[in-house]
Length: 208
Image 1 (cartoon, helix red, strand yellow):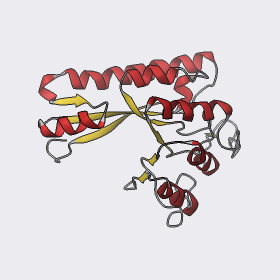
Image 2 (cartoon, rainbow, N blue to C red; image 1 turned 90 degrees about the vertical axis):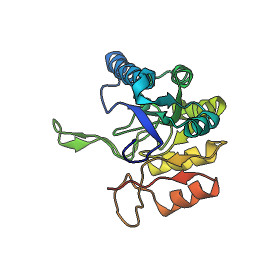
Image 3 (tube, one colour; image 1 turned 60 degrees about the horizontal axis):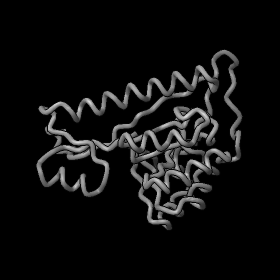
């Protein structure tokens, strides 16, 4: 960050696909907690000259004081198991950017990238919930209430459009590209791009 003149980055607490049962949820939560602790340790090491930014004011303050800033992200609601209230714990720990999916569907939403199983030679169904599940809708409402940012990258198109219709705050796509230019499912359709713009959201393109 210092060498590149980068003042702030989002570091994502993320897990990949895995079993959606009690043990799978416990393993996902444990991995997320380990990653969270690692990021916080970075900010507690004085020589790193970093803060954990929990607000816009803290981000500006870091810039003005010559410090780097880390913003905590969250990716894949499999970390939550099936409990929306766990969002509060991660927000309290400093997470501000929330993405419901990664590869594979979970109990909250459909992913733009259904998981391929080498054992069966098949992908998951294209849609499990038709976008957001009831849990997913509750999660979007709660993220809005907490003051977090909803990140639609890696959601399926129906899920993204449902988030845009439901969210009371602008959303971001933290690492997405244009499907019209590169026709893969994790990229954004023209409709998604237009709707994100209409609500005052931001799209961050990825370099690959």
